[in-house]
Image (cartoon, rainbow, N blue to C red; front, side):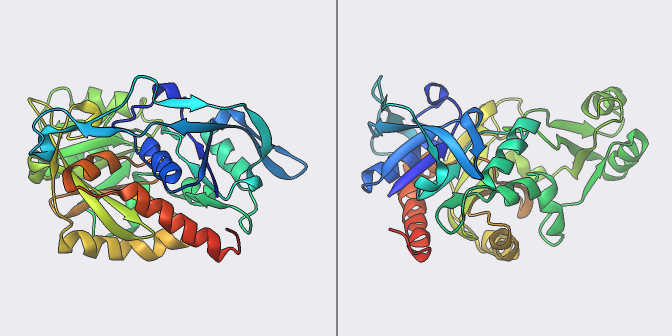
Length: 334
């Protein structure tokens, strides 16, 4: 089968961390062709979604370094020239059996235009993960609001007074830009902080853009759990623990990763989300859970595969590709 991955420039990816590379490796090892492109290389011709695609051959990472007896001390190691590219071909995306949309956020206007192009991929011929309509519907902050029994106290507002009153009522809160990624722009708010007005003004661009305000969960110091869902089912988890004076646990800002189990509460939250995720065509998803509360639903390019594989001795990428193969066969292909 042929698998296409819409990714950021491959030279900028970290083969020891990026889930996109883990998925591509899994597809290759399982005997499938792997092709890559970027969202800037997509278009529509005669009603067909087109892309300039390049075949890629990967040298898989290996586990090594550190304390070989402890997964926490090991790391993924890649050879210097870990990928080789073939000749570019401008072709219909329908020639692929599956297309993985893995461009990193933020979700900009060009990103949204790309999802419109992906609407012209024939769903009877090619599986698109995640669904372009689902990507448009699921802002990674706002999408969680519909699951009221799973989330902490939350508001969305651009009104400074409303935000001030909320922080005063809660005492402590966390502000999140609706279009942020990897912990960027997340702020800790405290009642009585003399900088509170300024932080809200900057984050809302003087009241022009709404932001999310969530009650501060003290359990955040113990970690921000990323749970990977495949078609609504949890298949693995990793804990991201803040280090030093940083209150955010995101790996991108230096959070330490640790082995963690998928709990019964995690499964309860997943069950609440699963019907809507399936309805929206959101197959590969990462949810964030702090203190038993759902805080975000990540659908654009969820990460965590490499860390979970290393800590738990599993191969999540293989599970995802095998699921995709079965779904492709259900289309009558393969």
